[in-house]
Amino acid sequence: MDGNSLSVIKLKNILLVTVPDDPGDDTIQELQNKVLNAIEKYESKGLILDISNVNILDSFFARTISETTQMVALMGGQTVIAGMQPAVAITATELGLHLGKAISTLDVDKALDIFTDNFKTV
Amino acid sequence: MGCENTGECHIGSEGDIVTCRKVIRNVATAAGFGMTDVTRIVTAVSELARNVYVHAESTGMMRWNILQQPGKVGIELIFEDQGKGIADIDQAMEAGFTTANSMGMGLSGVKRLMDEMLISSELGVGTTVRVVKWGRIK
Ligand SMILES: Nc1ncnc2c1ncn2[C@@H]1O[C@H](COP(=O)(O)OP(=O)(O)OP(=O)(O)O)[C@@H](O)[C@H]1O
Ligand SMILES: [Mg+2]
Image 1 (cartoon, chains in turn cyan, orange):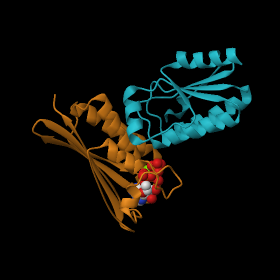
Image 2 (image 1 turned 30 degrees about the vertical axis):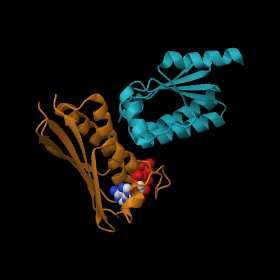
Image 3 (image 1 turned 60 degrees about the horizontal axis):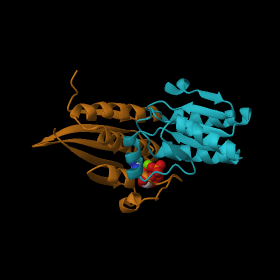
């Protein structure tokens, strides 16, 4: 399946994951496992989920993102969701979905800014 | 390569949820629905197909039909299973109600995404969910 296409990229103390356009439940589950393992391994301070390719976000996906955000927070990291397509944002809102404590940004660049700004103030 | 006006997909595994989404994305796009409506329709498919897979405890089918009416086009989706059924449909439609320790957002959300929604169910016999989305012909 498309599960193998999922890679976690380490950028200094941040992790970047690009989610494929139509992720199956197995891919989403794999994302959670890979992210948590990588956070532990690299002691990352942040996670950027690039969802700019994603064209469907249903309740299962939202629940897993919200859960992952919470787990990442328990391990001391902040999650940023980057690049949600307008049609996906409209649909997710109408469906009544929440992404928990994740921060959202327009794109990955702005997500990176959040981490750089945070580090300056620390 | 034009799309058929009717068709069906089997729902028996997690992978079938993705297959149903892909099929309906193509069908709805070919029928002329815009990007946002296609996303609404595909998201509804994901919720209803997953409900069959997770809750019915049996396999099921998704059938789709393109509906033609003067000035508008519709997509009708029927999800049918011979599973355990729903005890109280009004309660199942309430946001937050779940028997699976989930979020209980699926059915109430689908109602907002689609224009028509009808559920019929009998305990031990099965469940049928019919939804329709209408769009204007450009
Ligand atoms: N096809 C079905 N067969 C049997 N029961 C169903 C079916 N579809 C829905 N239900 C029942 O209706 C309840 C509400 O469904 P709904 O999709 O709103 O929430 P959920 O699936 O529990 O959670 P979520 O969709 O947020 O993950 C389910 O918990 C289940 O009890
Ligand atoms: Mg559901």
